[in-house]
Amino acid sequence: MKLMALNLPRDFNQRDLEKLFKAHGAVTACTLVLDDKSGASKGFGFVEMTRDEDALDAMKKLHGTKVKKNKIHVKPAA
Image: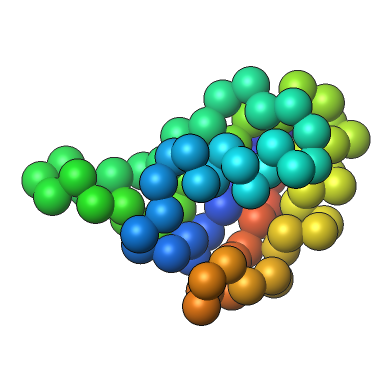
């Protein structure tokens, strides 16, 4: 299942994003969206998890939590 994580801290990197979700199950793919010119994070990314149950658990437990000073949002990716 593919999830979208929004309102991530701007200093977050791909490794941080993967680590955040790995605590809830196996991650098959992880992509942090970066600005083309500056290379800085745009504050959102996508995570694909092997098991739907793990993805749903991650979404339930991470949605609305604070990461650094940001309240993140996690939802299914369209």
